[in-house]
Amino acid sequence: MRIMMADQGQEWKEIVVDFADWMKGDLKATCVFGQLPKLEDGGFALYQSNAILRHLGRNHDAYGKDGKEAALIDMMCDGVEDLRLKYVKMIYQEYDTGKDVYIKDLPNHLDKFEAVMAKNKTGFLVGDKPSFADYSLFEVLLNHLVLCSSCLDTFPSLKSFVEKMSARPKIKTFLDSEAYKKLPINGNGKQ
Image 1 (tube, rainbow, N blue to C red):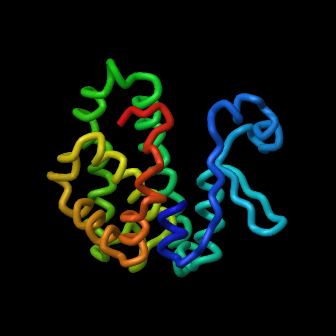
Image 2: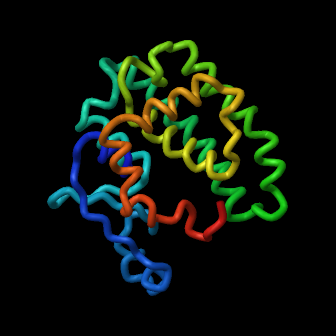
Image 3: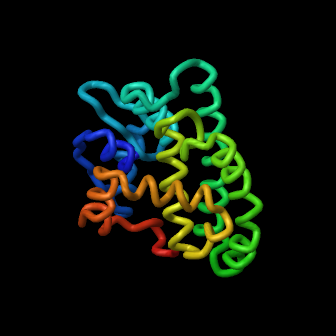
């Protein structure tokens, strides 16, 4: 979300909630599903990462040019979420025993995105400009590059995609910022 908002030239105020405050339960009780993130825009509040991404996509012309592209973008976002959930499970539940297995199996997940990206030939998952699914994939790939710096070496389209997205001026500025660098990749410190 942050990368997408940065690329779209949006300003935001981020409130980071520490674990101790979260465990008090007051904030958690106000969240629809008892979890963050939360996006507030005036009097409008929205929860769930992918719902927020879709909302931002609709509001910033990052949801395809028509209904078919929007459906494909939704499909790709769900595919990215599947990969993110596998990553999160490994990071939080199986890091010590499952990291090597996860990295070994990673090509079996990345190859789907590589095939879609190579077929589209625009450097994006769907259409000819970044969609909210591209921003989501980009963030997941950045996390995976920290986990295994060579994970994209056999995926030229994905490697090019990361380079292309990283070079977008507003994204580059954000990635180089202290605000981005000080954020932990994962709440448990494992990467």
